[in-house]
Length: 250
Image (cartoon, rainbow, N blue to C red; front, top):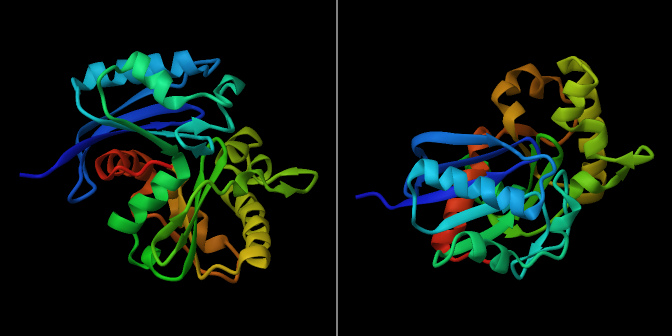
């Protein structure tokens, strides 16, 4: 029988969870999504996670992703969630809401990168790969021959008097009502800057907008090849479930 895990992906707009077949990376049953509470405080998010697990009737180990730098199970930043997350002891927080459970927390883009290596695009495991997740912000995962360098934050790199994700996230596309062509020009400028700094062999584009990759990836002008994530926006949930099953504690 397949080994089943459960992953929770906390995003700026929605919190999603699902059972995951850890041998195939496929969801088992439906994904559950609840809008991210406003404000997205530690307690409000934890309560939402409990609601998802109750709805799923899941009482086993849980992997959780956050849009945050996570080191030694402490959150050090808070991107598109409430500032109360900064310096939060994640083990203590989730142990209060989910007692007697094995829980692992990691950065959302890192989880997506790990999932893409195991179950996604075949080239994710070779060379210097940068995975970017486009959503409310822009997450990043650095992969060298399939090995993760954790907690990179390219979305917050200074760019054009602001930062990358405030210039080229998919939320910016929606908020400014940019066409795919207009938005692709912005993404191309960002990728060109990343090329200049890091010289990757491949970019992998994930996040919800990767489901419509045919509308914008062909319009990109970066020198480095860009491919859509095979797992699309499932990758965070899959990577979270993998992390708790494998004991990956950043």
